[in-house]
Picture 1: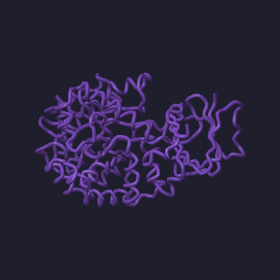
Picture 2 (picture 1 turned 60 degrees about the vertical axis):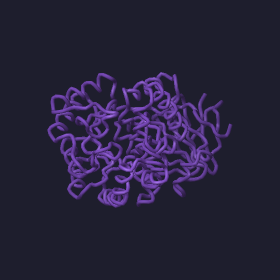
Picture 3 (picture 1 turned 120 degrees about the vertical axis):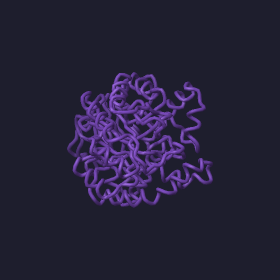
Picture 4 (picture 1 turned 30 degrees about the vertical axis):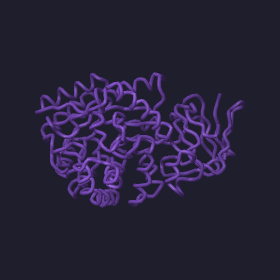
Length: 400
């Protein structure tokens, strides 16, 4: 049976919108999109009346960690939990993410490849969750940032071996740790970690296998090392400089800003019990992150939404807060939505399948009461998110 949503504002994902429009879904695909007067609804279709509502592509989060639970000391919890408990939490996090209107995610580091198993269970229909691309274990230097969800590697040859291991385990994307980070004690976010030679060797090996590459980088030097090596995206980009901006533009790389991670830690860490070492790093970078995000936007760097969901106070299912934060720092609501739809799909290499409301594409759609073009924060309110449609199936119906 077909599904039709009519008399609705359609936010296409391309920067365009359609007023009083109809969208028809047939099977797992969008069959038709256009003005109400021009789209014929097939007989027998289920019809959803969309007056006063907006329809947009399912949102895409390019940076999550299913294995982290967003507690104040999420890394210690991960270390203390039995792997079975971590897996159960990951399943609940996937479901919460889908119910929040995030129909596709990229998990960029998990314990024991748990997120790869979760993704396979989602694909098989065993559990609900977003379409999930995985990095497997993040590749880091010995003792470096993210070792707790990583594969430690020393030297170019070992990095190549680590890449091959992730691919064998089922990784869709490869992630490298180019600088220190917030949640690893004893590491400085600004300091370089994997060397330029290691990054180049890893990127080349990933390319041979047809895998895209993401690099965790707060500091400018590590960021530039990763960009010169040929990564597709920089995760965080907190302390970028003008030379890094030039490299972003030259290499046509994406910035996945993860504003929600550092800003949530800074806002809630002191009263919420975040470890002092992590709180100090968040406090030291919060203002710089805001300033440098504005610089990146002004320079024309491609932005793809990513939250770092699972880090302290950055909950799975509250992913849309990233959109509000981007708008507060200068993006228009329409551009923020593009970052979470078409741009994110392009980064993931899925732009032919998802990311826009166009005939022939996968029917990953959400319906929200009101217009996020008027108030982007509507997408954070569960009661406002009335329908989530994934692959043509209604997986959330708040009107029932």
